[in-house]
Length: 103
Image (cartoon, rainbow, N blue to C red):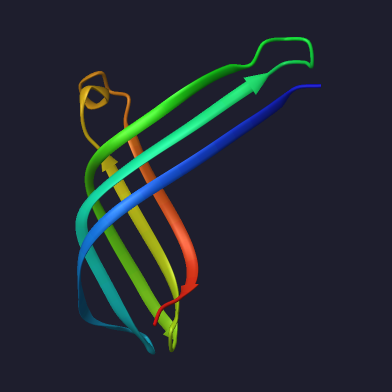
């Protein structure tokens, strides 16, 4: 049987601020620079060779966290990869959703 794998890594630097509240929780926003790298591969069967590819992106990054339960937040982060991929209409954008605790 075949298998597929994907590993992704991101590093973002943000300037953050608090634009206000949404319902009962504070909003924390951020704008900055993001960098991501991912590797993925596919193999049709145990005896076939693994086909793999890498993705890399660097560009503006946005972040929005909703602090809905004290330090607990629901967040969305986006990295808009710039470079040759945009000229060829192959976009390298990454969107991450998270639930976490901030202190």
